[in-house]
Image 1: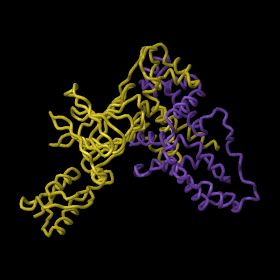
Image 2 (image 1 turned 90 degrees about the vertical axis):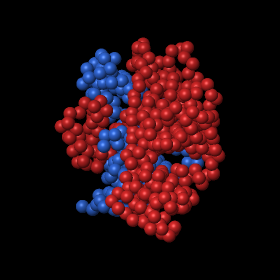
Image 3 (image 1 turned 45 degrees about the vertical axis):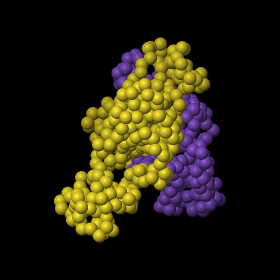
Length: 197
Length: 318
């Protein structure tokens, strides 16, 4: 299982994580009422971990969007509290045609810049720990030695760094992202399926 | 964002860090499994935390320690350049410090059992599909992405990086690519074979380093018989597709003898097809499920008006 997590993690790193900000933007356009976007995003990732195989997925970005959309629709159907402005809005999640020339696989150069830009925003020790461990591939002990901290502290910095990167990558890695969180709730008059009691 | 999700992300990050460092005790590992199973959001958050780690790992090899000034890396992605390009540079340099270049050699191995197939995403984004009963080891360094095919057959879809060639070794044969798709097989009693689906590769033999490398492009098959020069053969696209049918769990036969078909099925299943000598030269054509030798034997016997019987782990055609 752990080997599989690693492989799936890599697959997600390459195919989904770089698009998470876009997926969020699309979800935001849906004006979800009382549906936590974080729930949808987490469920979407869970879906990729529970699929028997990722092999058949040819267009991961589109697939991720479809999955998020299906999760939203499912919530709308089954929940008494969730509603969306209008059904038509679901069209916003329509899947674009797969990009002609593999454009969807972010150019590696861009990818490097996106990752370094996010790293740049981490507290110094978090960043250095992550760089040494994950990019340089040092052992925990070597990282500790290099940074003159305890091994326990290495683990702490790493956990903290991953937590911050989850957020940064999620909003596209930009420092002061204008994508304010979930302010854009629906205007009441647009709600067709009002929460019942 | 709800504080619950914040908390889930925090825990996911903590588990991912601890598991990456391998610092979990058996009880903690059990606690982790229980946490994962408790809520679908936990699983998703954990997957994303793993993806964060994977995304960092992808920079490995391009962002190794500061390259000495005289280094001949051709304008590529040396750490120095990244540092100049983005603000992370200064801190990265600081992190690595003046310490000597530390080229770590991580090695990983992947294998399949008889009848299994497996897709592996490597840290650079290249994808390897292992056919039945195959094994590779992977070793990435700053200069090269090295793969060793130890047995069996593997399809490589190589992520482009011209500064870091992708080199597959199979016995003494070396296949070099920068960004392409090709299959390498090393099967018992057969010479090493390479099939190019896309792009161009370069082959040479480690045992005859003086010989000029052989280039092969899409739809070319290269065969490297031991102790003899490498041969290349143009292949029709339909033949190429047939040779890659295993990717979809199939065996494609085109006018092949029953004896050859039996050998092919033997790669995928413990059930043996035994063909009587008198009929072993009869030929069959078709697409068959590789895990179902009995189904194949039935179909072949019926088409060729032969008999078949199943006995334990053997299927006889006569």
